[in-house]
Image (tube, rainbow, N blue to C red; front, side, top):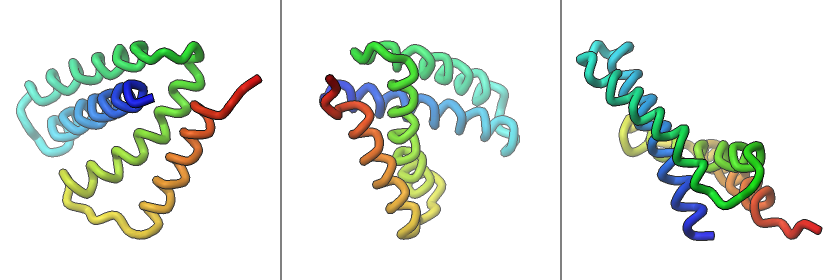
Length: 108
């Protein structure tokens, strides 16, 4: 379970980080290499989830969506300096509960 969560976190950081670099290039007029590096990181993001042990692509990406939400809230807080409010944290907690149900609920 810990390896699975680590892979989700690495994938999330790759998606957010790659997207952020592309954002900086296109929206903040940063140099072209920001976009190139961001694009490469986004390609890695596409590969990282395939390292999961779960057999279902849909379930992996649905569960990853919840992890991504939590990471996006944290990224906004730590990198963009936008403090999450109570509703951000409640929403993130609901997502974590949903991810846990999807991935680890006993199935017959």
